[in-house]
Each structure stands twice: as C-alpha cells, then as structure tokens.
Amino acid sequence: MEESNTKACPECGTVNEVNVTSCIYCGYVFGKYTVCRQCGTECPPDYTECPNCGAVLGITANKHATSNIRKVTYQQKKYVAYTMMAAAIIMAIISFKVRFLGNYDYYSEVIYNYEDNKREYRDLRNENQKESDSYKGGLFKYGYQDIANGYQGLMDDADERIEYFEGLKTRIVVTSAACFVFGVALFIVAIKLIQKGEDKNGINQVS
Image (cartoon, rainbow, N blue to C red):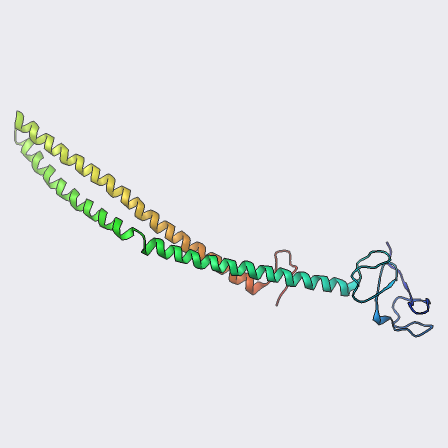
C-alpha cells in the first residue's frame, strides 16, 4: 500500500500536506498525535497500530517496541550469564573434590605396594630359577622351577593390578581437568555475555 502524502486535521477535517506541523485552516498542532504513514490517520501517541488500517505506527512505535525487546533480551542474557557463572563455580568445586578429596593418593599408595611386592617376587623368582638351573634334572630341578614359575605369576598379577590402579588415577586426573576447563570456559562465556550485552541477532546493542 502506498504511503499517503496528506493528513486530515482531527479538529476540522481539513486535508493538509503530510509534512506540515499545524493545520492550514484551524491551526491545530499535529505533533500531539502520531500520523499513520499508510492512510494518514491521526492516532493517539500511545497507539502502536493504526486503528484505521492496522499498520504499525511510525518510527516512535518501532523504537518503543525495539527498546522493550532490548530490555527483555538483555535481562534474559544476564540470567543466563549468572546461571553459567554458578555452574562454573560448581564445576570448579567438583574438579577440586575429584582431584584432592578422591582416592588419588590411596591409589598411589596401592601401586607403590604392588611395585614393592613385585620387586620381592622378582628376587625370589630369580633365586629359585637359579636353583633349578643348577640341576640337570630330577625332582629338585622341577620343584624349584615350579616355585620360580609361581613367583613369575605373582609378578604378572602385580603388573595387572598396577595397570588397573594407574588407570583409575588417570581417570581422576582427566575428570578433574575436564571439569576445571569446562568451568573456566563457562565463566569466560558468561563474562563476555554480560560485557557484550547483545543477542546473536543483533537486536540488543547495549554500550
């Protein structure tokens, strides 16, 4: 629909050019009302739509609507940012608890004990293997060999247990580091949201 180049005076009905500030007949000041740029109808300043044609009223109404959108958007983003900050703090606490209040030190002690036992088993295996090698055959040779093989089995079992607890320690470190990094990332994003104060569509431009 084409924009009207005239507007009617609400007091006397005289048709005036759209850009005049007062009626050419009765002197009515047009500034009291918003003029619909589609049909020329004078509308009260608090109207956002023309009651005659339904068009959105002028720049004032658009700015008012945009301002409200900005306020709502910025408030929503602040709430999101504060929620992210709270989540970041929680992640930092979890990271600290997993690493320093978990079983990391206990697992380290268990691994140390298995390594100590493994060294003892190795010495006993070597000792019995030496005894077995000193015989060319017979009951003693096979007896000492069986004992040496038994200590070798204990060594292999110790290796498996050490590997298992090393895996638990690694899991603790990785989980703690992941929580810490994720928490820091959340905190940084939250700070940027607050500082920037604008949504991804560019509606909110808070300086």
